[in-house]
Length: 284
Image 1: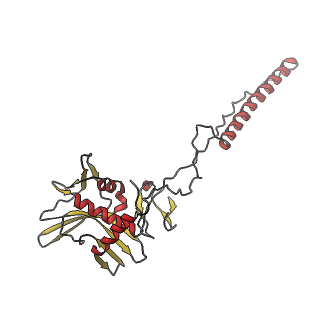
Image 2: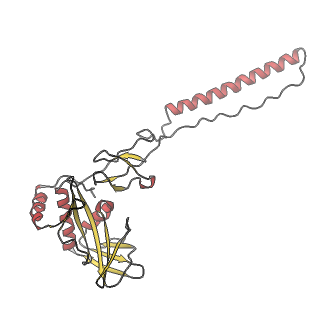
Image 3: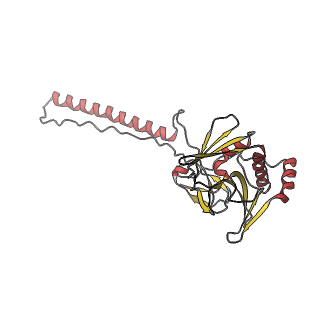
């Protein structure tokens, strides 16, 4: 399925199963939503097969022969008019479909630009808060990839927790990432994460990519690190709560951690800085 990036207008090709999901544009590194393709319904014209006509083997002289011939001609004309009327009805439905038929707004095979509601510009108060925290950010550069990482806490692997951090690319674009780290002496072999915000129902977070696993000096680390925009609804739900519980569900056991007010506030702050630097974030 072909469509254009809503940010840089680059032509992209995505599998049909990714329709209405968000992905990271390989060109501009921004997160965009794959449109849903709608095909224009087409009426089908069905033409009933002509009924076979019996071939008379004998031709009668006189009035009987003339009468049968006239009857056959009349029947043929009626049948022909019936078929013509069905054809005209089919053409009319193609040109002007019935009122109950839903018509796609665009022709088939034409990429649809999804309607996406992003959060508006920061308020003066939000901008002031985000600007004051900039000098407190931890900065880590990657000269090979041309990326600079920003976070409120150092991006370390030996700390169990959950946080947001920002990647600034050499082309000036920024992206927000969500990292959940498990560090301990025993492997969990994490399959998914279970999150409960306040007293709401528990939600399952299934990774889109493989979890990174490392072992070093008697300790093991399992890292979930993905573009935050792939999990926008869940992150918005977490940030709207007062607290949250996060369970790292392993193959045979699990590890629970609490996301208290301070942890959630740090995530909210990184989202503010991301928006201050021009990042787009879907509204709740």
